[in-house]
Length: 292
Image (cartoon, rainbow, N blue to C red; front, top):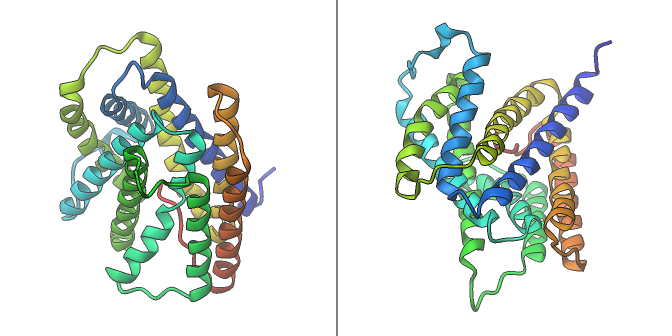
């Protein structure tokens, strides 16, 4: 029996959301033994190994279609985003890090307006601002004494927004799987150089955790790409919200983090933002989609 395409897309987005939370949990479990930059390296390495098993050998070539500057820029930005995010995950509550991740669409819209010259409808901008407000409610930043770990998390969201803009600028000229392949081909050696000064020989259990993390990261990226081809992005992006309650639950149950009123209120605002954004997009057939 074949699933309805929209339902299948929602299930794929749910898989990506669950894997995304597992990614965060994996970093928290090993960050006291493995440097964040080394986690970035092994995550990309195992993702590349998994993709090599899925792709036919003739597709392992390095032809970039004349778009190598874009591929290099995306690889560098993605590595920066992962490194900054993993540093933050080791020091901040999971709810905080996950909430900040929802600011990526806000930064992407601002960049689309300023750089790509796109026009954004005011209800959509209101929705994104509500979501950004929800993030601030969860995070509760201290302006007088800023936390560097919060800045790392926001920098990661900003870098991912830049990746989204680069993908959008070349979407009609590149195949999604080729983009993933070339990104990993560049990321693995660059990440190796990045982590070399902090290298430690990971224990077998830590390697196993990073292997699961790498395969899961690839699964999440492929799931999002497939989901966006199956259903309306305006509906699918709302499913991505389940990352936040899952992260909150994992933080409380696994790491003894607290659940308080501001976290619940901020999460509610983020959900309202996604629902409003989805409603506007469903009427106008456009939406800001999460990065793959």
